[in-house]
Image (tube, rainbow, N blue to C red):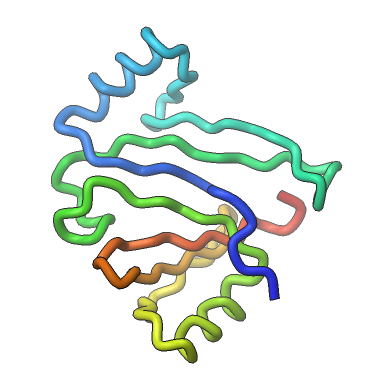
Length: 127
């Protein structure tokens, strides 16, 4: 079974996400969008007709979205979220019960042995 197929996003805490995003836009040319982050598009040999995306997004310093005290969270692209979460549970990995499914894909979360929250994302079909 395929597990991680790429990085879907890099999310990190910021004291002032809007100001930090503006700095990255001004100094590094990152195309920050009105929603506060940027999407980098690329092609994948497994889906040459589709376009993949990696998201870059600063979050407020007090976000509850990450593990407590964590400075960042990585979102990994996966091929089959439900199968992977089942395999990880059987391997003794700490897996959140919550799974989000929307037009943006399927999202699940696990915690590594050092307490880092990891987001797993199965993109929508054709992405």
